[in-house]
Image 1 (spheres, rainbow, N blue to C red):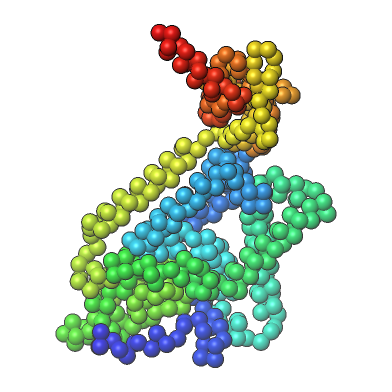
Image 2 (cartoon, protein in one colour; image 1 turned 45 degrees about the vertical axis):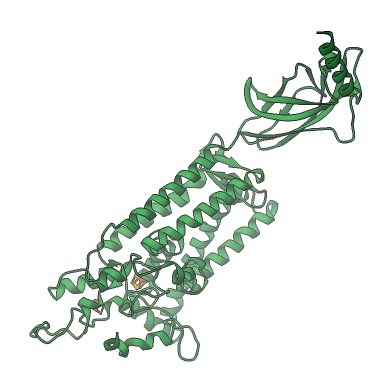
Length: 483
Ligand code: SF4
Ligand code: SF4
């Protein structure tokens, strides 16, 4: 695009880094418009859900819990333990593929509408800033002004409210790790009896405050790994926030008396509104950039301008680079259909993986270093060890049945009772009639039961005396000769 070479200098600099390497603070104008209103509603719903979830319990346990310290996870009421790690890994792989495919088709839609960084920044912290410090130019002026009473009270109030929100949010984030009951305990008992939890809250608060009061758009531009991946995930067909350069160029100032078409001018009136509202300080007219979080603020700003200059809306809109270059409308094509089918398949796979997860995990091993015992004149016995992980929400009594061959099971020390989320172990004897043993190594099959319901089936071996194999062969031979 030779005709646009004059705008290429944006590639040599970063919008938030000055010539001397210092941070350029972004004073973005408050967005207004249809998409901003939709995003506001979405954000309030998401914030309400985020703060309500820790209070929602399923059978006395949190709906969501990510206790990395004790390696205990509850996802939508279903408990996961370290033994479910394979499920976790498979789900993560499916999830990553899902994210990649979703981004290839829909770009960074997640960043603009759902990402907590955007939701907190644009719909909680920034509105408070507008309320206390005024609009973007008033904020700039305040920052440049000398330290006087006006600056002290405005900055003081703003940062106090910012810290308060961070402090409250930290309680909720901790609730996602430890459960809300522990957080309520910290609040009611005071920090003196819960130092670890209290320090955790202070750390969370400090990080939260630092991210939203100081780091802000730098999280999206420099830190967020998802943002960094955009360069490899997006292609010409990805749906992103795009400036229609075919329609907008050559840009030129608006003059109500001028006929732009006959003067060869495009629809962009160079008002700068799209850049003024951009929270990452970029100019979307330079094309898709890593800094763009697809927040739609520039769409709203440009649509307002287009209305004013009596031009069709959508000079900046959701579109793929190809649809703009070819001047075609965005269509639901085979590629999108194919990716959508793959995405649906992955979602089904994840659901399936979760649905086949068993309530218990059990292992049965013959006691190490033991051989058979002659239990009485009729039976041989072997000693085994059973280990059961109870993944349900209730204490369960585990019973055992010998499915094959006939025999008797005696659990040593009474029935095996395992509390919810715990691992239970017991030793037990298996008695098999001497006459039923045909070999020194007999296959045995156990059924693990709870409340009469079969939970698992496990195979093992029963050891008998060495001579059994020969005796059995001889008896078979004798039997054959006798016939
Ligand atoms: S808001 Fe629209 S018209 Fe104004 S500079 Fe941006 S693209 Fe051009
Ligand atoms: S370019 Fe537009 S969509 Fe991208 S971050 Fe800036 S305002 Fe948001």
